[in-house]
Image 1 (cartoon, rainbow, N blue to C red):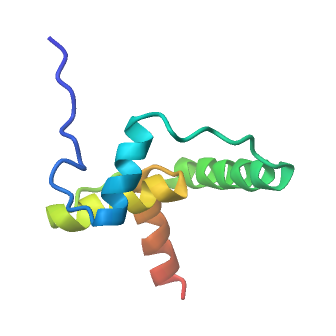
Image 2: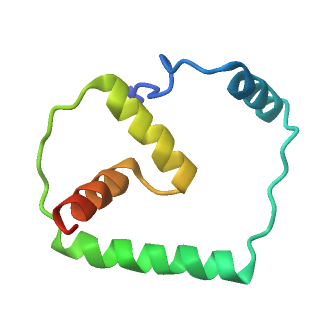
Image 3: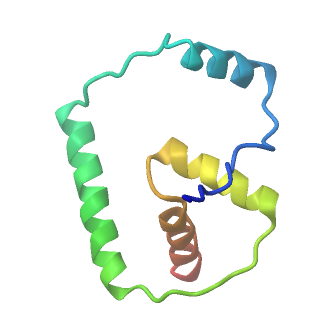
Length: 97
């Protein structure tokens, strides 16, 4: 029996505009747009950077408030990156600023 991960967005509170956008998405009203060459280059560079960082990463465990984690996951989706990469990036920027 396959066990699926919990939905991180299950308890997320949406405002009216977000609810309307979600309904429109679920109805299939949004269409994908092709990436521009500049956008493609940007994402390729981000992927290369992420891969370089992954080679040096050390796995750790951290306890974090569930609401904060859900918000981080939403931000990661908006940025188009895994949430763990976003967390690592935030920590990296903090210690190097």
